[in-house]
Structures are given as C-alpha cells and as structure tokens.
Image (cartoon, rainbow, N blue to C red; front, side, top):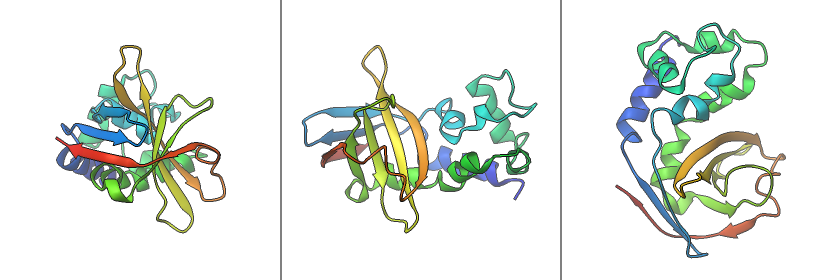
Length: 172
C-alpha cells in the first residue's frame, strides 16, 4: 500500500493529465478546464496535512513527492483525523468517470459560500456522493476548485441548487 499514491499519480498522468474538458450546460454556459499537476495535491487535500514533508511546500513540489514516492499513503494515515483526505485519495479515480462519462454526471449551478460555480457529481454509490467543484478565476478561466466525498445525508452543496443538464461535452 506504500506505493498507492504513486500509482494514483500514474493513473492521473495516463487518464487525465493534458486533457481539456469542455462542458456545455442547459443554461447555455460553457466551461472549459483541465486538471493540471498543481491541482492534484489540492484536490486530494494533501497540502492541509500537518506533516513535515508537506509544510511550506508549493503544489508542484507536493506533486513531485507524490510521484517519486516520498509522500505515501502510510504518511497520510499516520495523521490523526486523516479520514477526509483518505476518502479523497480512495475516490480520486472517480474523477475519470466524472470527466469522461458526461451522461452519468449530474450538475448543479452552485449558489452560496463555496467558491465553485458548478458542482459536477456522481450519485451512484449507496453511501456517498462525489463532487468536483469548478470555479472561475479572475481572468475568466475555469479550474477544478474542490473535490468532495460526502455522506449521502450531507447534501448541503447540492440541495436547493439549480439543476442543469449537460447538453454537450468533449475531451480533447
């Protein structure tokens, strides 16, 4: 299990890295984004861990530690209260489904305090809902802002939000 994060990075590089995802929603808005290397540690929650290996490091440095095996799942689970990060790591592979199978994904336009303007989510597991939040930066570009794995009964991020359909999506 000590090489789990290295294999996760290999999967990311094979299946997600370099792809540009375009979604057109029923409100006629189009979002276009990619998951860059520097997004991966943030989406996994790695940067928030109180670990010596993590403190003071930039996202690209954390990515390199994940890739070369210097930061392992054993490090993550050694941290008290690591469950949230652990759940993100164990469900990271679902990003492939969210980003490559548009017909299985649900979308809401987010209204509220979360930075994400849109939440793309999978509602296929009996106990959890997996969310990818996409936000807009100051220049108008889109980026993956959050990755959440929440218990089915904790749906505050999608309840009472505006549901949308994916009219078109492309992976380039």
